Image 1 (cartoon, one colour):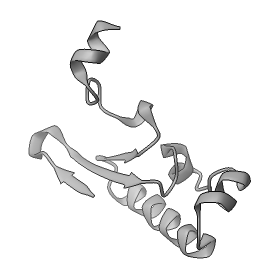
Image 2 (tube, helix red, strand yellow; image 1 turned 90 degrees about the horizontal axis):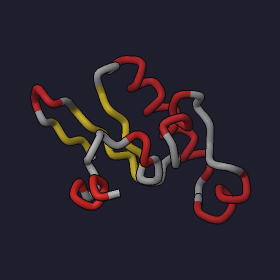
Image 3 (tube, rainbow, N blue to C red; image 1 turned 60 degrees about the horizontal axis):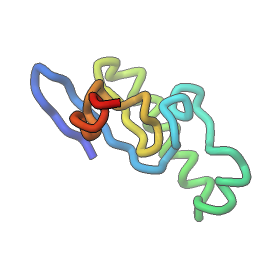
Length: 86
């Protein structure tokens, strides 16, 4: 899902395609054990990873946010009040 916040940036939420931004940067799949459990069509998934990898090179201002990569989220994007109290 793409979210365009104008001057604040454009964000691409990629779900479980990879579990970290690094998976798109390399590009690389999840660990083989996890891949065998959660990915039904590995060759199709590989094409999606490569497409996002190419998109990152073309749109360097795009913020990629995989579902499980907390470090990829903008500061205070997740439960800001909870995060500030810790």
